[in-house]
Image (cartoon, rainbow, N blue to C red):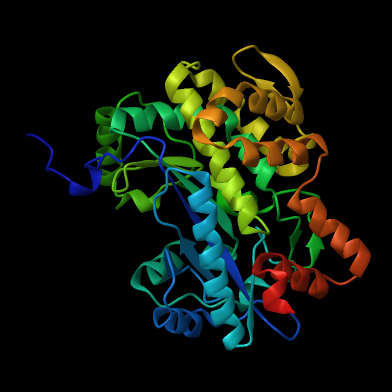
Length: 381
């Protein structure tokens, strides 16, 4: 008997190499810069405020998610992110709130969080218990457009080799609950606790993926595509591949640069198809991922194709050099040059946060500086 047609699994093609960004953001009070439970009031005000993109609730009342529209150029994506930032920041200021980037809040307690009252979020609380409140961490998701499902599967696998790059270049969660974790990105440890985290199984076509999804659905393990918390996943309703490992950067400029890197890398991978789909990449995947989370660009990196061990910093710099002609085609030379300079200098948002703590001596002040970084100094003058 043929399987019942599932509209959720219909892959809707989009323009190849188009890009969009989602950012999960922290809502802070303006007294001690702890997380505030004011997402409802902020969203209500923003509904009455003209702004580009979309602003949505997230799983707890101390966070929001902003989404850009679809872009083909870095410059227009960056411009829209700046407009969204300004609109959200002004609305927050009217409510005496502050907004911050960063993958984690430096000192909040997860037990203080409240679930945002939507049916889905309440369902997640019932399924995952305390993990739902611990999921008050903040990530950047990058969507890259592809023309069909088979291309989405290919690109998802091809990007897996480079996932440590995105972790290291976006790392901004060194502190958790008042403690220095010794990680550059501690956020992903929270994500990894979910049973449906990890990676796409080694399917090769969209029809193979549909068969896998339908089997998981029959087992009662998943209800929809949203139940997969994979590091990188196809999004059939958008016609994209979604990269989900990034911490939310401290600035929208950095977020736009990272999207430009994803776009340029996808251009190279889809044009040259240099990497055959192989389980060798997944044999070293967790090791490389851990190294990126723990040490950032200073981590070790194993190239599954050459079986050589090197440094993540070297692999990032070599990849950026390889991408130069593709960056010229896409007008992404400037953002990739900025990422190259940061990687060469071993700079990161996580290092910036630690330096701020060393200078200020207070995690409350670190959170304040995070908000100033994201909102922009004119709004905090």
